[in-house]
Length: 280
Length: 247
Image (cartoon, rainbow over all chains, first blue to last red; front, side):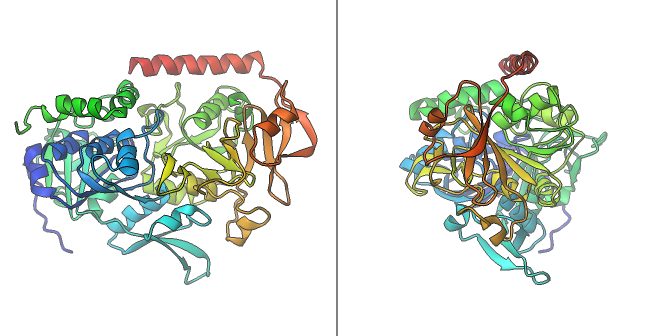
């Protein structure tokens, strides 16, 4: 597919999500512990999207919130927990009890899902890795098969590529042409933007010049994105390297908030649905 | 348990570190006898030197103190699968007599009693690191005859099962618990006790294990933690608590 080299428009968060995320889409909101696009996810909750396939290596608190609000019917993931704390109670409630609606799981290993994103970015139908052999993961997904290396005969795993309808990331900054810079722990943000049909980035700020960049900066040209929205603090309670730290206290507190359905709904009402810009 | 695990690491090791107990043991080793051990976390940082234990696998502390930070696809493809990691350090919810590890689900996969986080990096860590150390508290709940779900393939059905699957790495070579140290029998690959922690009896370990547990011909007594080791551990924990409370 040939993409036009249009400059990514800088939109409001509300417009960036409304124009790109539709009911039934496969949506990947990425950011490996760092730069998790919470604000963009909350906008999806406010817009009441339904029946999404949510893809993410580490579902984290953000997917607990989206799934607890009934936005998704399917979750593709490789590690679903509150890191260092415990379970994602809303994900478990959806999977185990169908609350607020049933959730289907497609489960991978990190290496498998990372390979699937990279294959998606490369426009390939599948990726190859030396993995999955002997594990029970292969019994519960049709996205992994084994094949023989055409050169050596070694048995390798093939994983179906992930090509989401929408890829969403949070980044440190963009310039006025919509070029976006990510640095620190860069996860698979580049892969998810390039694998997606439509990509959206929220950023801490817009600057005249992206520099100075750190040695591991990833710069995504504006023409790889459909929209950029400025949302200062858009990754909280995760963190944005160079801007603010991780709110480990909130990750610990989430365990109690999310354990109870009513307390969870109360938290969402107070902290997501009533945020500025929310339709009232 | 943390001290016993830390002792297994050397400065020359390149260690892929799981979060929780493996991370505590690895950083304790770095504070003690293995100052130059290379610690790698799956979020991308290589050569981490954190002063406090990270809560998550991608805390800022990790990339800020790392020699370099790579992307997640690169981490798994070039560094782990590429065979550059000597030790993989994993935790477990269940481990069986052939050191297969379950971190996915207790009970039936589709109707689970307990849904656990899943593989994360573990499945390919177990496959691609030179060898695997496992750290897990000893109980009948954890040490089961057969795991409910093989998340990370250890020695499969035992014997040469790894080799038959074309896996060339050593797999689990050491299991550290709060009661003892175990390693696979060289031939059968069944986990056997080769060292008991001070004051622990064979009967106690048998009681806490869900299969008829074997013992090595000679069972040692694990040296007790030294004052230096205990002080370093307390120090690390105190710094970590202060840091996480401060948010």
